[in-house]
Image (cartoon, rainbow, N blue to C red; front, side, top):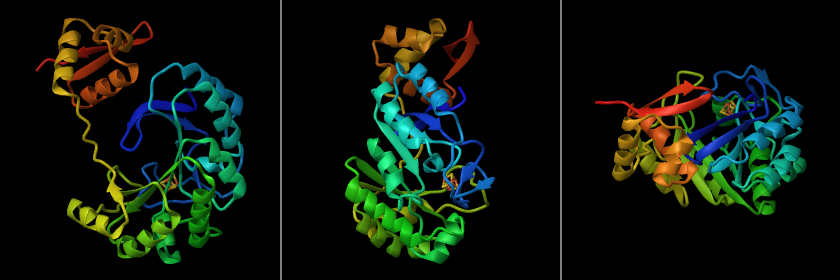
Length: 298
Ligand code: SF4
């Protein structure tokens, strides 16, 4: 697969099958917390980075699988792709699962971009600053981008978009926490369905530090109805873990075998298996082009 990744377990979206319309790291920001590393291609020019037909062929080939969201994200800012609108609209006819778009919000001041993403079910934009100096410090944008236009674009999106908007605010120690009040007021003016506060959890592009849990909890009060993005604390129900481990200690099975034997939906099985793999309870081996999962004793 060249353009699709996962499904991965996402803290915000559950089991997410990702679509990457960019190549390398292409973005109009160079956020200090970016887990993809530094931006290699800093541009605000929309362009064609991949062949739409090839992407759609891949989506079609995975359409029958179980996942919670088909998510446009990946190695940069998806709205930089001029093909986003067409691919999204055609993907909608191929998959039953809801479609999400993760964006850094910077191109939402364009009516064309807002139109293109309007057929998504959920848009997950981000906003990490309310003033120009903080915008430059945390997001290191293309010099032509202005935070006021970003916020205005988000407000326009809210007025026009019928689906859900989940606004993410990434907080980084010593860089933007002093501006939380202003960010909270800006977020209120946007009126998203959810405001999700986050801090650095994965290895970031630069040596920046997260806010501690106590601080994050206290900042919730400044926002109107905000929530913390949950930690990576997924668990399998104990009875289900027992059944899975019992089955897989008898013989290695494919995901389809497991779903059949335990009479469960495919998406639930993938989630459980991924969690147990993460916890070192299950392993996998490739045989005749298929993955077989087995229980790890001890
Ligand atoms: S907007 Fe996203 S992809 Fe771009 S630099 Fe920031 S975190 Fe990385």
